Image 1 (cartoon, rainbow, N blue to C red):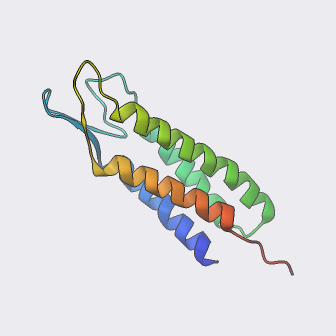
Image 2 (image 1 turned 90 degrees about the vertical axis):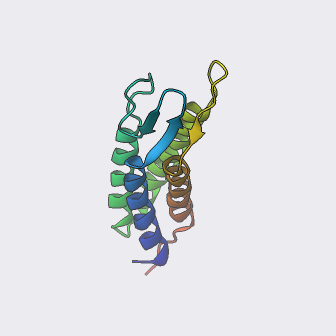
Image 3 (image 1 turned 60 degrees about the vertical axis):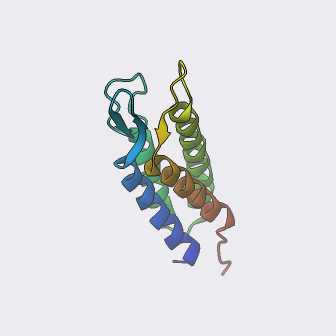
Length: 127
């Protein structure tokens, strides 16, 4: 396995861990949201798709095949887009109330970008 594959696997694990960390805090209502726990809002559970895409990306980092890289480019690009969408939705101000963004949201975005970069720059050895 190459260094990029190992880094991509580690970033996928970080994405899964970041789903369980706090993403957002609304001080006035005493609410803390994670990727899976968004009770009291209309956010849904966006962390489920983050976990599913991170697992698929991690599995596709394992085989050193060209088809796996091509599929993984699509999966990780969708993961980055979904995570960026979560960042926009969770971080917006509504009705004059701006929530405080927590470490899980930033960590999720950074790890998603890292998985995409590792996928794009991974090179197959020609034998």
